Image (cartoon, rainbow, N blue to C red):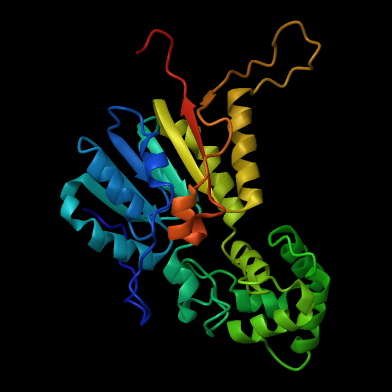
Length: 326
């Protein structure tokens, strides 16, 4: 097993663990005889472990931009020896580490792992106080949630909260933040969560859901450029796949799912000719086919066991094989 870089020492929080979602649905869509599997969002190694167990003929390249995930997965998957290579990578770096046209199955689970959400030190949690950070990979620098909250223009913040968080009270929240900034920096997740809770009218606080959920989601997506990273992965996927290879994406946000849906559809029907053209002249040919016309979702049993699976949607696309090839 190889690791591309040495992550920093463990944080004092709980061991890294991410319960894999839609496991059987994922396994059912791996091509028969697959030799090279790629788990682009390794997390704690849950999906990777079951893939390696179910397909003993295959090797797996696992990647994650979170050094804590790389470290935890390395421990969990150590028993597979040379069958697994682990890299500390973001989506936009992945194509440089996978052989072009050689990937039989590419998986991306876009969910956030439990330790990221639950450990206050990471700055993702609105229930455990900690520094406003939210970076998946703190070692690579980048703009923290603290910088977004305290330095971003009010219009920019409102756009982020409304578009990425789909928060209808974005304007009220930004006004509360602007007022608080006048008295000094908003330094912790607890401070921000309290401001949001006060800004959103109490009658709109949903039972069992913290009122800051959407705001924290939006900040996390902005800090980590999650939509931009997803676009980079989808740009690269067709060239990474082998003939007959498949890409499977599990999304949890409507914007992510829409991007995957539209990209898969464009790969299947790329023609840009006007509808009245008697024949295609644009020269764009299909990449392959959508295996799942509608997204696969978690069963009631899985949702009961893991409520975070409720919003998961799995879509799968298969690259075409050359004519005459079995």
